[in-house]
Length: 504
Length: 64
Image: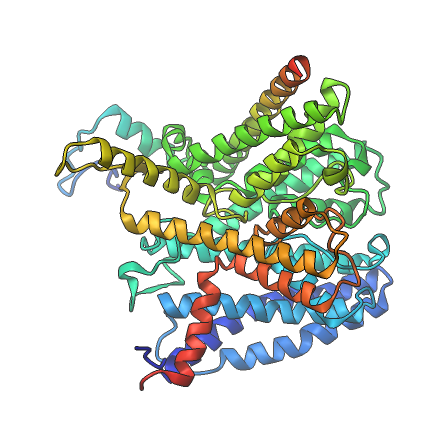
């Protein structure tokens, strides 16, 4: 039986969503004067046309009176979903008005790709996109990444999610957002530390690599935002390899690893609690996945004979493996080569890394290393039960930043559900692609679908401007499902159904 | 005079292990130092990844 949400529920969700939309839209509005300074009057107008109504509506939304500003579990999840979709709608307006998109669906696809930190793009003539719109893409990545961290930290802080899922457990009725402020502090500190390090490191590396001073600031910002937030959008078709700089690539590897490491682990590293990090189960699986994907990529590249010498194998292999596991989707070669020249094993290793993704509690996508680890623990637990005498009690546990957790059936079920939904999403996306264009190879379709639902954004030449509307719509939905971890979207749909059909 | 944070209400020193004292001191590090610790750890991780990647690629190229 569904209970209809109260009027206060709806008011609280609108008000909280309006706060998120206001911050996001103000950021877009601030880019308008930047566009004017850059001599891009049309882009400035487009940015204002998109941001101004959104700011006005958000201001009005924040004036709605509610009995409590605290968000319960249901309110928090529905608020997160509505905020993400509303922000994508706002960002789609200037993108569409830029004239670089074939249709509204393509512009909305790019907007969703930006706020979900995916990195896919259907922009036509990418190399001549106005610089202010490149900054808009970067802002979308930063805002999306920060919001994702904040929501994740708030849920973890409520100590109910057990870092495994959006399973509400015993939290119904209790407030989970905005929390005590610890999550917000950790979020902005992480963003600031990665941002400052990135701007200094990548900026210096790019200037040494010979990037002209005039384009240095925007190139630096876009690369840092792409790597540190795992967003993966860069404003040139030549990939990161176009800069021909090992130092730039190393700095991006640092940022990608930072962006895919959980805020809790980064905070423990800041306090030099290395023993806690070493024992952290999610971190162990993360390191294990990195090693496995690195090994698979190296062996695959060596076997396919893609590169003849050790150094190119290492250079392209390391970058590709890190970009896959951290779900950044950047590459040092033209992405089409992943299908045509990388053989079979290397792309398979990369797809596996993309599907699993980085750590829960970071900005990365995928179904996360912790869920992967919990599934493995579940198998171990079942094997133990079979081998032990009847009636014996077996407890399997894992460490989470110095605290011991005991594995329960709910953890394994939750992890298995998410993984299963991811796999269904990959199959659905690949099927739509194969249906739309018979020339697409199965490998390319599977890689692209994994890339979308894992919020990776590695485009191997399959998603291009001019795609059929149902392809862009399917992949837009996949990106949202991936970022909101499925249950967020399901909860929002259930909320709407409850408004219509629920018992009052 | 402000009471020592490691003393109880009566002002008596709280006896703790050296490890606890060290942890207490660690949390008192300035923000910039903690940021450097965090970023430094990620840089070390990246260096390890690069070294492991180099070793793996050398092995893979040698064997295959």
